[in-house]
Length: 133
Image 1 (cartoon, rainbow, N blue to C red):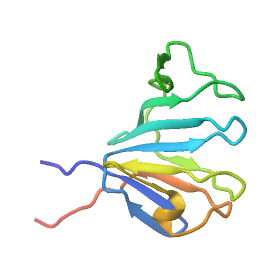
Image 2 (cartoon, rainbow, N blue to C red; image 1 turned 90 degrees about the horizontal axis):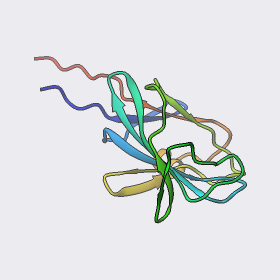
Image 3 (cartoon, rainbow, N blue to C red; image 1 turned 180 degrees about the horizontal axis):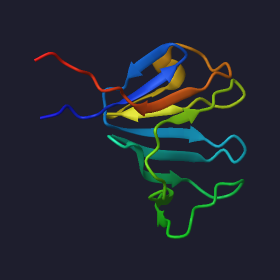
């Protein structure tokens, strides 16, 4: 049986295996100050967006047609093809991205040990590891 794919975080020369095939990516909108979150899964075809949730609308954050109202905002399944990677812009002028997996959450700075300095971080399925049999 093949090992499940996991998601990697890359920043500069650092590549960190997050150890999970799914993550929740969270951030706060820089203008609206509303929480946004997305669920992503690693697949052989790339990263697949499973669900997106926003607390409210405004400043370019309107939920799409078909979004359902929840107790905490709006949720929907993004209509996106699998992505080979997802780039996360990072700046000390905005709050850092938070990545949650297996019930634990940490910012990109905490995970990578590098503060936001304009260098983007990248999420992607981890490269396949080969083993000798």
